[in-house]
Amino acid sequence: MSDSCQAQPDLQERTMPDLSPNDISEILRRHARPMEPIATGEEPRGGVLRGVKAVLFDLYGTVFVSGSGEVGTVAAPCDIALAEAADAVGLRLTCPAEEAVECFFETIRAAHAEDRRAGVEYPEVDVVAIWAQVLAEMVRRGGIDPDGVPSVDPARLAVEYEARANPVWPMPGAEDCLGKLRAKGFRLGIVSNAQFYTRRLFEALWNRSAEDVGFEPDLQFYSYEHGWGKPGLRLFELAVEALAARGIGPTEAVYVGNDVLNDILPAARLGFRTILFAGDVRSLRLREDDPRVEGITPDLTTIGLWELQERMIS
Image 1 (cartoon, rainbow, N blue to C red):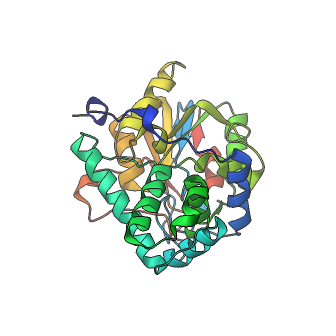
Image 2: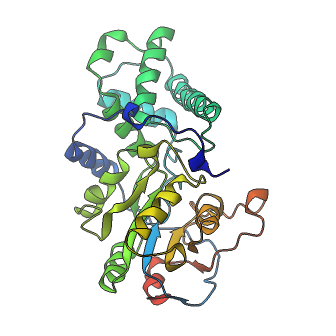
């Protein structure tokens, strides 16, 4: 059964942060640092794709170099990241930071399990709600000084932690690639496992919005907004519907991502043509031992975003 046929969470229950977009961008910008991709040893494969009208991208590990390779995971030591984030929002830990970090991941696992019981095969959490639960639980355990908790914005804590735990930087050639694809008339979109702060990466790192760099507003699909994550099909199904409204079929669209399971598999299942981005060892996920991707091969493999505009023809 397709993911979209299963029970979906009430989106109105998803927590909306009070933190302003400018505040989010400033926090992300402050902790960003230049990072270069690390060569994977892969070689470009495939030739040229013809008849392309739209190009959709993954973000973490594809458009942006990611310290961890994926949103919600960690590159920096998580205890240090949390201790610094707690200090930044005025939260006093009375336990080792490792305990609060483990509580964070326990809470995510519990939320995933609950959503799976409700029929969501690949659920996505609302990280603001998760941090609110963590604060309450750690107060109950005596691991946080309760006096400071009422003044703590869980959204700010989420951004302060993520900015330290998973720093990101634009992938070489990304902005130029997007500009050239847009200039050639391709419709550009995003399908990404993401949280509320992901949208602000463009302003933080390029001083431009996602729309300013070429992504169309209604061709952007972020997992946190829907409660569904990749490798589930739901985000891709939404993309198919949005493209259909433009008279574009899945075979006329290309999806670019760094993970054979999360990106190539679901996109291919819905008829998209696919490009595996194999430009950074931190983010490349070939999943060669995963039976779910048996027989799945991308149409093309690229090691640099600068190649894309030469490998697709409308």
